[in-house]
Length: 137
Image 1 (cartoon, rainbow, N blue to C red):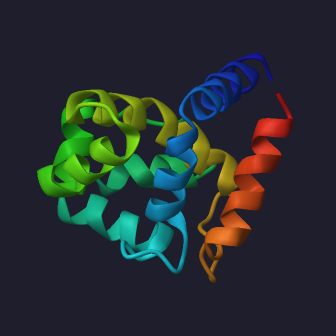
Image 2 (image 1 turned 60 degrees about the vertical axis):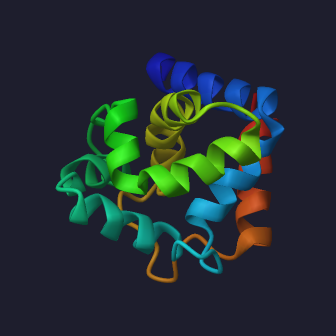
């Protein structure tokens, strides 16, 4: 559990340091988000040729890493620019932070090794899950 604790500690720390990041993550992963939730994000990864990476996060095996450049290719420069603006940072920092947070977070939100059939829920549901992850730290 040492590695898992380390990853989740880093995720929780970054979420706490960047309050706006919780909203960004909700916007990316919630069913009622413009991006289509986890299923929509998975489709974006597939379209970018990186489906194996997000599948590793959802699956029960080891999480594959993702680079900031790969995050940019998945989300697109325009969307990443909006995320960066929302966080008050530049796009390179936003993509770097997302590359560090998303693997562990998606892994924790899919503990059964599969994406839930109904997605991760709406913004309120997801906010509760993110809050629960933070309280464990």
